[in-house]
Length: 142
Image 1 (cartoon, one colour):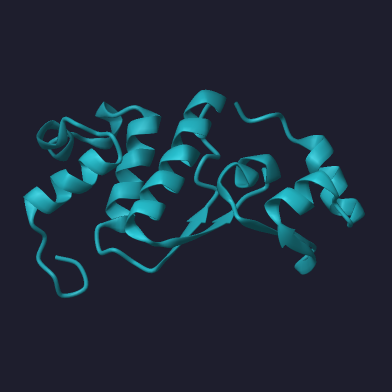
Image 2: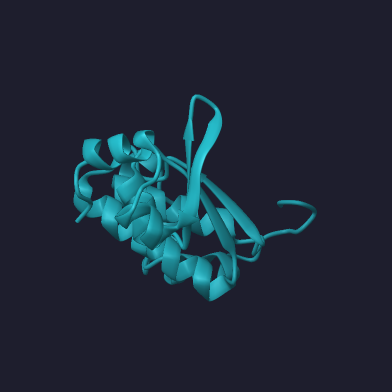
């Protein structure tokens, strides 16, 4: 049960399929250590979206994943949230990862918002020195 709603296994399986986890029955019977990091992340995405929220906050959604899995998780987040019509707010230190799926980017430095703009504008023409430092410091996401 969540938020007063009892869960329907078929609805959970449908959501797992939406995040490309096709063996839903087995996954629901698995312990976390029996799933790969990428599977765990996709499962977390599915569970966070099961109630179809309008806004999803993702705090460092790719921090413990390798570069290839990071890219697939970001692409999946974009695909699934668009399909559900949800807005995603990603908190990350990796500006290039955010740029992979963001329409707009806000850059904070020491708790202050130092730059906001469309993804294309911020990535191509950063106005703030801290944004330029961020862009220079991160590895390219595949």
